[in-house]
Image 1: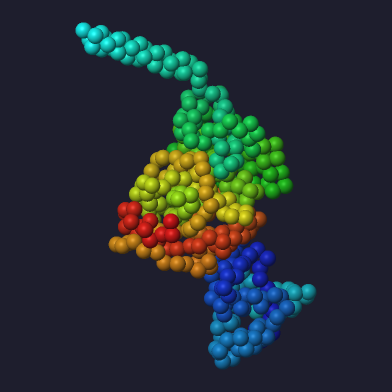
Image 2 (image 1 turned 30 degrees about the horizontal axis):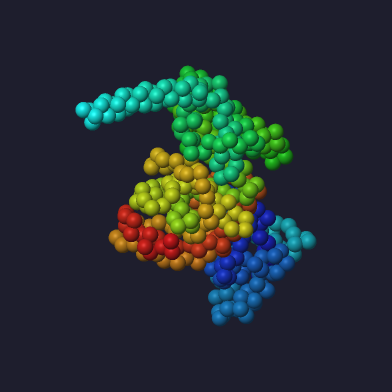
Length: 102
Length: 301
């Protein structure tokens, strides 16, 4: 079910990637987070269009990981990003975005 | 006989000179009354400070002696009103962080912290502050104002020791206790920019400037600058050596050391970008050091 959702970076964040690793700042409270290469890959896919299902497929193509592990880790990471207010999870692509009913 | 005469002459001459010196000093003191205003130039950003309080101006002249300038077009004019302790109701209440506000539309803001309050207008370039007769009042207000005006340069203040050696600038960032003052103290061949808060200006080549914002060393930096050649994060250790850092690590480590008082999205984004720029332009290292000058031998200085 969750893999049908789309994820979008919160507008109140900024990020910069150096050598495949991103540093993300929450502009509301000035806290920042460092992401490893896989987390950076997920972050960069959070464009408000890509469904988490597609995201997981791309992770499997890009990194040597089986689908179950990729799904578990990806959803866990997205949950963390949501709880920190760094991304918004939506049931629809960006042009129809609204809050999901979880 | 002749020799004695000569000695006598020398004695007289010495007396005469001593009198003259005395007269010159007296004349000099008379020619230099405490000014009603002073221009301070920190990081090539001149600000004019003026007050009716002569004691405050004398204190300011002494405290900022390395930064007094003849600049005629200050960026800001700061009027200082000196208060007595009775006039500051919250003086005894220690505020952990300054209370600050800034309006992007009008470019006006306010600042309050431990017996000090101030307001400023970046459009009219006027600022007013009220404080007790103590040098820390103006110092706090200047730190606060410079964090804002520097963003337009662009640049920022950073918690670090700043030194120049062989015409190259170095910063040693870190919070209190990491060894900033120690590094400044055990570097006799280097020019001190600050043992606590030097000023960084970005642009083509990142530059590091001296400031009067000092730490435990209680000595102001020099009004000079140099290209920033290295960022060394100090770690107290039993031997001196350096470890290279990736730009991403420099970026992460420099961010918490930027001096800034506002929780403001626009400013945070600007500082974030400036720090990224710095981390990708200037090499960074972890500097493990003993409290002596031997660490300079490990550095590319």
